[in-house]
Image (cartoon, rainbow, N blue to C red; front, side):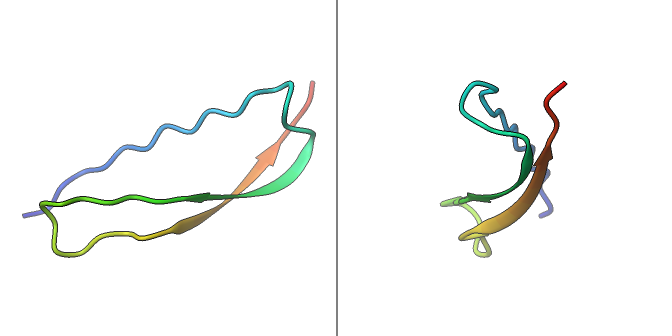
Length: 48
């Protein structure tokens, strides 16, 4: 069966500088045979 996974990513503005950052997240599911061990996300932050 297909399942929808929503990931919420929050970055604190006082600890993250402006620029491009690599964020690695790990997603595990005990009920799924296939799982994402680590997914690299390219996050670009803007300081207004």
